[in-house]
Length: 498
Image 1: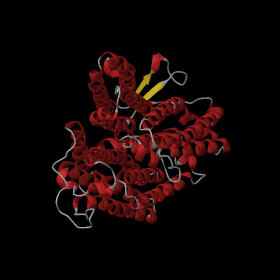
Image 2: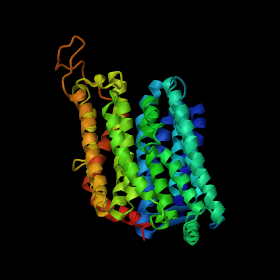
Image 3: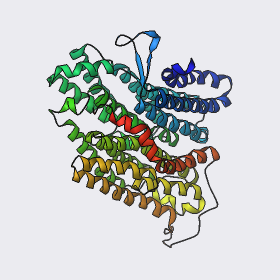
Image 4: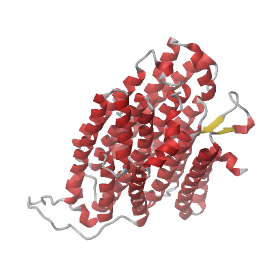
């Protein structure tokens, strides 16, 4: 039955499409964009079917080639992986739709390379989500990284240096992760996650195990841009082409955070396996530092895309903080924030790309009276800003609420204060954006003006539809956050805590 192959199809469908697109582009270039969007949409639908199947029938385990683990390759989809797969595929599908006008206007030749790389990137992300062993997770992680390096570098100019820094730090992160995997294989002779989770408790407080865990956390911390390992992110998000940033910014760091949670809870059974070292506390405090550092740096920026990049550093901190607290409310909040941050950051970077295309740049001064020329885009920014700050009914409020409950339950009142403080910082930097977009600013002669500098200039429908869809989704997730948490994330948060 076709549905029995869903875990494999999540990665196979976009991979086959990525390989077929250059051929289709050589024959008929006009087919490239609809085929890419169609492949992304099909992957999102398959992810939805996978989540429904997990909710009704439980965890799905797929043995590639019929070979059972630990010798064969196993793909596993549980509540958390199904939830993340739907989040990632949905965001990438919208980003592919959004990218059409931007790629056509910014590409002299065929758009095939961009869309082929984008689908390869999606296939790799799906592979990370469903991987049932640590080595295949590494393979998919690196293929996704290579695709994103090429996409960032495609902008030329300053994007080349941003991509070079991204490659350097990404390679360091991959090396740390692979060293950790090697140590675990040395200890146990297996890399299957389920098999490792059974064998590791027998080792006790092994020094080799502690070293392996340290390597894994540092490697994945670089991939998720956790302070102070975030150096690659600001330039990559600022100087990459707008279509590329809209593709990678909503999902890249969230998939790395998912991988970190998977390793810590599904493999290691944290915090029980790490009771002898303060790793989880260090992770929680690193998340708290990221919230404050990223927020302060975002306030200092005068370019919209760079401001949003540092905001991403801050928002990733909430996810790391929830993982580090390692209790059920905090984990539910962290996983919910994966969805919320993906949606609100996707919405904001979609808007930034539309602003750059219509108003001529991404400096905050370019946003003067944007609400008159681009009212729909401005309204979407307002919705995403409310979610970023944590104001109900936007979804961001509810993930931060669960994180706050988790911090208080763990007795970390200072971290609870950091969560609240992060919302105030978000209010400051998002008000800075809205001030330029909605209030009169002095013109070149120094005189305040309340006249719009031109007529309506909304983005094309292919860019505007994903933007509106995400803003509606942000509110919808807030309204229906209770069933999302109780029906999916509460089960996901329980894994590894028993």
